[in-house]
Image (cartoon, rainbow, N blue to C red; front, side):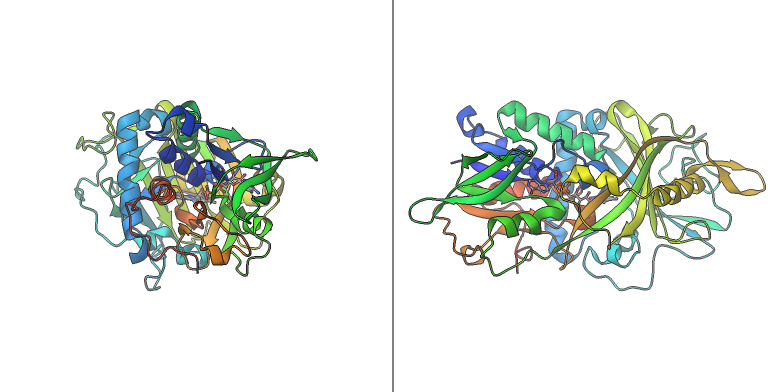
Length: 451
Ligand SMILES: Cc1cc2nc3c(=O)[nH]c(=O)nc-3n(C[C@H](O)[C@H](O)[C@H](O)COP(=O)(O)OP(=O)(O)OC[C@H]3O[C@@H](n4cnc5c(N)ncnc54)[C@H](O)[C@@H]3O)c2cc1C
């Protein structure tokens, strides 16, 4: 029975990957991914930071968060993820400058609260790191600042760096490269990808039961039918629009809003080879590579809560990513590839100045650091932020689909992952594949339904 996945970001690709495992070639031909963009990864999944956490989530997400963290590690071990998509365990630090840290006075809320409040994901840390604090987890030698933090982050005047978590509970990936791996595996197995393709209508049989989708390719007026009884909505911030188009008679709207964020990735002369884990922990492969993340509240040099990731890309290429400059008013364009037209050069200047201050060349007696960084990528993308703060991962009830009957098929939704879609991607993909195949999901989804 054909399955149609609408949206080829990391959630759609993870779903396709897990659906494609252990299938016969003829079943694989019946799994389709359609994406309205002419190319993939122009969306959040291509520009995100790639930070992964085991337990920085609220109670309703604990199970999915832990499952996903484990799957990231296992996938990396099985397929050489360290070299293919930069998987590595990560230390996490918070930076306070003049006593303004990332930890505000807010009480713990849902996992998406901090992003809308303009604070930091470091607020969500619940545990103290299990790793050796005295060593700070960093190899002693040329990569270490006097305070023990890695030299990839330049010391700040009046700044204090505190270790908040370690590589047993945090990791990083280069998200675009992970997406490329998932897509490659799924399409090599036989999953069909349709780019530049938009679903326009549901096709029903004589009894009004879902039996396919009408799709249009590019600007062509021609519409073709793809037979399917199962549809999975994974269009990120565009999911509410897709839902409205396909189910115009539904009495619900999908409670997900777009939240735009500018980001930058650079190369630094102080971070040219992967850091090595001195403890040789088994955190995702034989290479024992390590990454570093740092979280900081506003300072006199930048006026937003920022996060920076010293991460790896393919083959141990090292780069630093920085983001946190968000805009909830920026309207979502029609296509993910249109997002680049909305990049605000002033905001790129701000994120560049911030990464220079955080990782640029320090000069003795000079507070402002020097720009000796090489740009890898500047970007803007939209997170899908759900109003509950938790992603929506469930089958949609027939009564919520307007006048459509689903028979032995159905419509599922996996969206609204907000600031955690990379971390939660693999767990989401696995549980959605289980739901669609009628199996018991591997994580508790009881609070992730569509209300
Ligand atoms: C600046 C920034 C930093 C982030 N950092 C992290 C991080 O460090 N860790 C983490 O876990 N998460 C992070 N995130 C969040 C993460 O990127 C998102 O939650 C995740 O990428 C969402 O994936 P998705 O597949 O749901 O959506 P998307 O990646 O947005 O993909 C949606 C896809 O749907 C397609 N689409 C749109 N309309 C249609 C249509 N009509 N028909 C068919 N297809 C359609 C789009 O073209 C796109 O390919 C970050 C996000 C941002 C913006």
